[in-house]
Amino acid sequence: MPIMGSDSAGFGVAFMVGAGLIAELIAKACSSPQTAYLNAEKRADSLMFWVNIGLVEGILFIGIAAACDKKYRTAILAGGVLEAVITYGEYVYAKEAGLRNGGPSTEDW
Image (cartoon, rainbow, N blue to C red; front, side, top):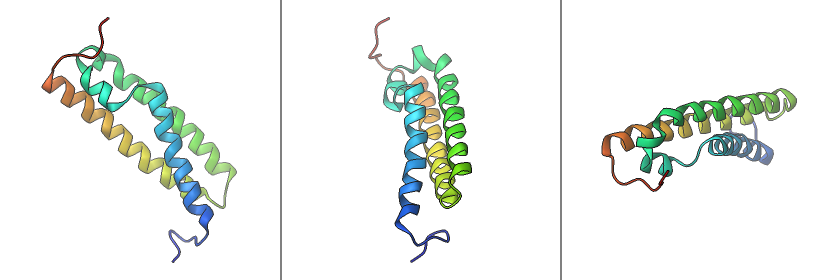
């Protein structure tokens, strides 16, 4: 059954590449939502700055990939957008919940 107008296996692969790239770039720029949650008291000021840097970087790469690969453009964009929304939401939640709930930090600096 065709998904989003494509019935090839390449569509799914391109979708996952787009999603994976956004997740990897944001993770590279930050840490993990779990670490952000546990250390929100110390990291809250810089956390979203670096999440936003990773998001901009991801959007740039996804945009380039979509421009270069017309056949799988929809899959690249769909995977990238979906993962960007999910990952951004995870970090926003981690920051807010970590600041609200406190608890012992896993870092000593």
